[in-house]
Length: 256
Image 1 (cartoon, rainbow, N blue to C red):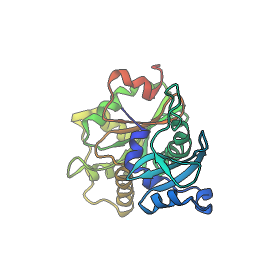
Image 2 (cartoon, rainbow, N blue to C red):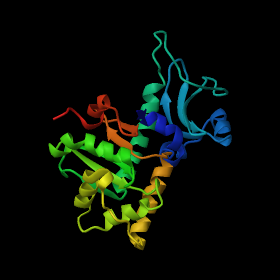
Image 3 (tube, helix red, strand yellow):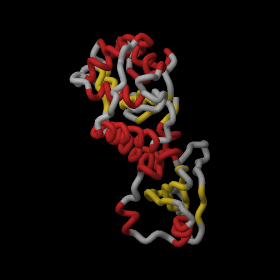
């Protein structure tokens, strides 16, 4: 399982905007010097012993910067106290990871997906899905108890990356009068599915598929299923590939 922190190493620069406060204020010279070298300053925070902390991104890495009391020097890295507690974790969580999680979740919501399960289910799980992906089908099977119990709604963000006809099959599902029923029939059949790819993909559907694929690329993903969910603390988490049985309750909640 890959946490949103790992994901941030791939896509932070695409998803985080500098705060209006930092855009408006004049940064100290050492911080500006790092900004000129390519660091993106995202937020600032209080630090002990006269230090001033800055949350930054450099080469797709989230990092903490600490300006010394004299304002002439900056230290890069995590700051620990006498008990070994990481004092950089909470500021980076607030200034970097939480905004990024909201941006990612918002992007998933706005993508083109096919619902699988009740709209009022308490838990929502997104997955990038290819109609020819056996592991997507495996996760569909794994999730049946939760979906049938009304506990989870899966949202299949359709892409076409595995085979030459994957995009045309995704288009066939999206073009169906009842995409949810069509997807259910296709997944239930597994290897025996009779889903036929569209001969010509309508322009509107192709645009949506292109946008889904672009979102997948922006998130640094290369395989299906790529699963996104909120954990018990409401923090965004990611799972690459069909999960092991022991991981299912982390993703879907307590088994009904």
